[in-house]
Image (cartoon, rainbow over all chains, first blue to last red; front, side, top):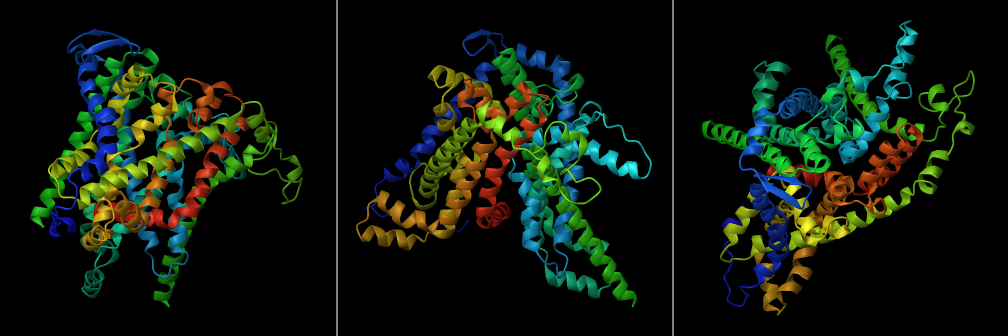
Length: 307
Length: 286
């Protein structure tokens, strides 16, 4: 922002080649590994391939087949359920934690922030391994804890209860809560610094209770960051792959109930070997995500204009 | 009296919820670590650590390093650890250097095409990674880079968002006058960059090194698609292989997961200060 205001002296002493040399690693890497594959993605989506070498032109057939493919729609609906789950469960929890961390005279605030943030450093693969073991029958933590605690009140919990067989989506959402609630909390915590203290005090003087203060003072102040966090969660959730793939041992879960869009892309491209169909799925994903980004930007712009 | 009571309730309420959050954060990992030291029959006898009969003392003698021993001797998991360290550090250093160079060029040079390059960087963020998975794989096949570390490192050495982050960092931390002064003193462009610019954006260098290191360490889909030889697998793929090949050996899977998570956690705790604040500040500004 400030750079545009600061005029950069166009001194003739500076070589006009220098900026290009500084940019060259990025430009070469971007050209070879992003722009070229992006162009190839257009071509590939009109082909059927058998591994990376053998291809056959099929025109728009991939997209026609995709629209009629019940597994693709299943993947879409699974991904959508997971995304809604992560937004409507995850983000309120994250905001709630951020608000709790704001409570007055709290000792160890920065330590708490650090601890709650730390699970997001654990890779999805490793978290998936861990939760796979936690949800395991008999040896898993969850069944053992339920067996132990419910046993006290005289309820016999079945140690062989198959969480991963019975509650596929629940398993995925619980694992993602563990990983990302603290991460999203960090953004809300930063946003809460934008809440104006004088407005809060004025509201207290006017006799507004905590609930009314939350909706009328806090929410408007954190709205821009909230929009950003929602968009990030949507983009991340729609690309869900490792969590189900690892948790369900390189499969899409029982009866494809853990099949997601990227998992379906992976299966088609690298298990079946049809890179063309995989790319068509990739385009469908890109359209959804760019669409979401546009909607969020329009909403944000509309709010700025009306504010 | 009434007010004091409400205050106490609020205090109790917030503290117990925060305690609960901390417990939920820690317990899965602590359980994993504890369980990785147990023998197969011990899994069924205790949930966390094995206890002595009728007391609250831990029976340390029933813990064993067996799983770790098998992990490093039989499965050669050390290889994965070395591969992960190599891939993450090399990619981290190269990406940080390339992104700092690119960001500096966009922030502090006036040249034809600057607007275009900046737009390119911003647009690149919109491209979802999975779309490039199949064509990228085909490209690496054509270049003969499949099943090589180069095939993993080269595509990752100049991510657009890194160029963007360094552009912001240079704009806010590197004064134009200082660059002019360096030039008047006769410093060349490269020297100016190394001696003047890089030290000034040091916090971003730390943050970005950490982001890239973690990103590569935790990346699964890349090495899973590109690599074929087991001796080249990083931890992410090696650990998934444990689940495939030793699906009923929970001890081995647990030990492998602990070995994969621990280095990252230690690194994070060492570098956390810059990292968390830098990340949050960047997000709010951007």
